[in-house]
Image: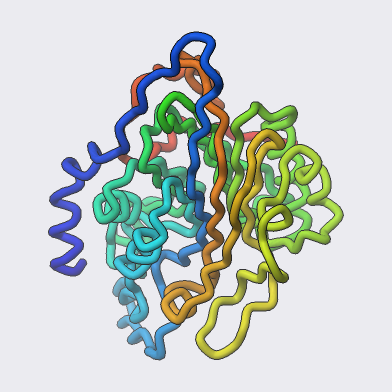
Amino acid sequence: MTARLHEILSLSVLAAGMACARAAPSAPGAPAVITAARVMTYNIRHGAGNDDCATPPSEPGTLPSPDCALNLERIAAIIRAERVDVAGLQEVDRFWARSGMVDQPAALGAMLGMQTCYGANLAHPPDAHSAAPHEYGTLVLSRHPIVACGNTLLPRAGTASEQRGLLHTRIRPGDATVDFYNTHLHTAEADRRLQVDAIVRQIESPAERVILVGDLNARPTESYLAPLFAVLKDAWAVAGAGPGFTSPASPAQPPRNRIDYVLVSPALAVTAATILTTPQTAVASDHYPVVCDVKLPGAAPGSAGLLLPSGRQSASAPIATGPLRNGRQHRVDR
């Protein structure tokens, strides 16, 4: 771990309290408050970039060396520069040797002064990849209070398929509350079909303020995405220009796939959608981030807390900003 990350993590408790202040409640009978939010989805590949380098091989019986192109501070700088309010990140590590044994959700939250909610889709004991228990999953970063979160383990076509999940947070920007989902679907179509169906069942007839982001590993023309597009609108189709390609990111060639999405419920207005194709993002990961500006209808104060997938009703007060533990996970089968 770098000295810089040690310094960052030492400030994590201070940074956890830096969420945006809550707006004053609307007067009774007043028009709904409209809150603008800048939203990002970004597959960060555990912070490993496309730099021209080679990771040294590890000696037999020793742990892998950290990736030579590992640069989590670069990921944080990209998010910071866009002044993002809420970000959904995929491929986020906790305590893997390849990523320097860093707790990446805590490190990113501290660097950015944002609240965090982490969903571990893989949780391993010490093994050839790490000397400590280690996790891999998705992360939500928010400048506004996160009042609840839960992670649903999505169905798989077979036990050999890597586990994927749907991370669900409730975020409170001012008087509005937003259900913000983050997912990373499987690379195999058979798994993706099951996972899309499970997501649609969970958010069918969405509330007024729902945003789903993630790496769907599928182009928008895939027929099995149609049920998802029937309940949520594709922000890029509304406000983007051009093909919207996000993958692969590379300084040597342009991207050729659109597989990363921001989807919103019909009541939300999307005012801008951008793919960040810059020299910095070309080397930071193997995906380009998608950034969208969304207008959120206000909500009356005192809205009910999020019903977590486990069936527990959360309190309306902000939860701890540390990573979500496996005890709150819930599996959805076919």
